[in-house]
Image (tube, rainbow, N blue to C red):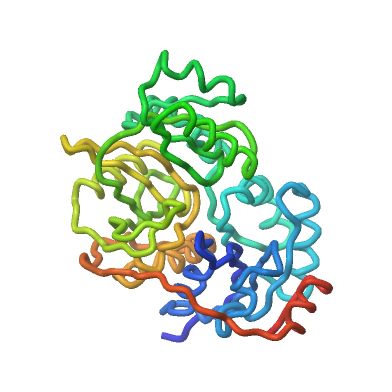
Length: 351
């Protein structure tokens, strides 16, 4: 079967110690059996390694930071569209998703750019700060948590919680606090980087398990691959992991999709207690950085998202290989200063 030629725009090219999902998504699409892809990279920073990696992006454009607003993003995409027409766009950062979701209809109608993203309501209600209410609404077990906006609120936490506690940023990063002083330290560090509010979450003792999955927005789970972290960085990111054969995790994920009608990719971060009960601690509304493991296990989720974005029927994945491992590694990428100067001054780069 001849592959369909298609231009796909991908963000999340910061392949560092806390990597974005962009590079694994690109690798997945490069291996697509359905599409011959031209990859248009979307970057925010001239130091994102994905800009300079041979064989990844065909061309990369810088786009405005999410704080610049939707009109600035729309104008930049309009410019890109005149030079490299995008058929499908897959955003991969939490902080940028709201703008892309709000613009999804305009992108399709005005520019012919297709996306497959959750609704605004789905995106907002699964925020870490809203997780307890979300869990009650959909009958999904979640740990107790609350938002705090001031470091002084930490002193009163002992009325409702016992240490240790998990202190989380609204987008990224978390730390475990075993006493008041550690909680204050985590609050100051995370809020300085990601802003307020900070989420305080009950600490659950157990085994962390993760699932990368995609939903069709109608209550069906199109694909899911569970993974257990084998090596974890100081930022809590998986540096190595292994796929699991676990029907309980798949049933849990299927229930979540049936109840929430989640649309698009997501990562489910869960804790399994000693009693075997599963709690969801986060629902990340995009592909995880380890999504290429799903491809290696037999489920090409990015390829499926491209198909669904184009309105094509996708047959749900029913199998995957357990016991498949990934191990992340560091690589010194040598590139010319000229390339850095071009992306920094012109806002676009073609290797």
